[in-house]
Amino acid sequence: MYQASDPRIAFKVPRALEFFAGIGLARLGLEEAGFQVVWSNDFEPDKQAMYEGNFGESPDHEFVLGDIADVNGDDMPSDISLAWASSPCTDLSLAGARAGLHGTESGTFWEFVRVLREMGGSKPSVAVLENVVGLATSHGGDDLAAAIRAFNTLGYSVDVLAIDARRFVPQSRPRLFLVGAQNPPETRGQNSSELRPDWLWRVFGDQSLRTHRASLPMPPSPLMSGLGLCVEDIPLTDECWWGKERTDAFVDSLSPTQKRRVAQLCQGRGISYRTAYRRTRHGVAVWEVRPDDIAGCLRTARGGSSKQAIVHLGESGIHVRWMTPREYATLMGASHYQLGGARTNQSLFGFGDAVAVPVVEWLAKHYLMPLTTGDWSTSRQLELEPATLF
Image (cartoon, rainbow, N blue to C red; front, side):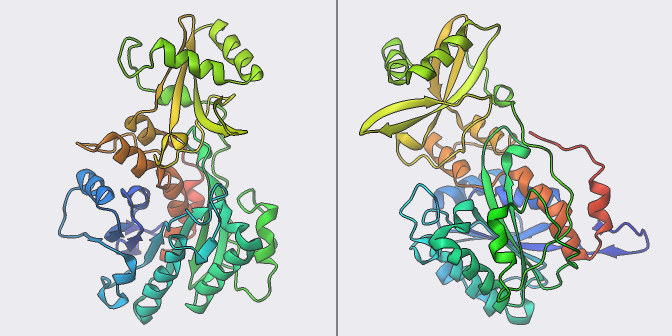
């Protein structure tokens, strides 16, 4: 039972729906904040297998495998306070063709809206959409406005926040969060915040949209280091480390600037770790090593170019290998996730296609729970708690 700041007032544990659930990282964050996720849906059997391998089966939770187009609002559980949707980002990503919310995959957002509409008076008081920041610029900002307008038609006022997982874990992973509220908090003044950068203010200034801006505490400052703490301790003699020929080819593909950087790190004291991506420059496949002790944004393992490598640098020279599933999990704030018998690419795909757990937890504790219960004093008390990073 969730306990309000006034001990005389108690609330039932708020119940939540999890759309586009993937492997359940949103559920982990929501439940850490006090929600009970009672229903989840995803299209991919491999993700369902990982989900159930971690959470197990429970009479209090239902996982519906299948196309969201086949989900009906009438079939939703009763007494729901929150609906969370981490809809596909493929058509909104800056790296894609950017078909936007009209694309085959990202367009499934409209099915989420349909289900909420079909729930009628039983729809939750709070609805959240999580996606890449590319949603803000897709079709010149029209897609973001369309998403907000869709929430408005359902009776939700919308707040929009940009939060980088780097504030909690050593991974650069900026994401956009649309928080729809039937009973939004009062907007006082401008409520300016780093979480609402200038490029979001177009929607807040659009008088045709119903928006609000909750007064929120600031999450931790972005991390400047920490990747090394997430790297598994795998002996350099292990066969997962690349052989000399492949490592030499890796080094040869680096630009002169990156070669100098790598050489300096090899000559420094102790051991340093960096991540690297394979890119195509002028039609040639090359490797690029990040300059800092932070992982690049983890992506789904569709092809080698999207996979991230770990680079070990020290007196023994340079050693390279692919990042492991456990490292992916740790960088997503889910270090204790039960991987079971999941295949490597299955795990990399699952984590690379998910939302970072501590971001969801922070948002849920400071914003979604107060929205649900009406008790904003809880959020103010949480400001005093130390942040758990990874």
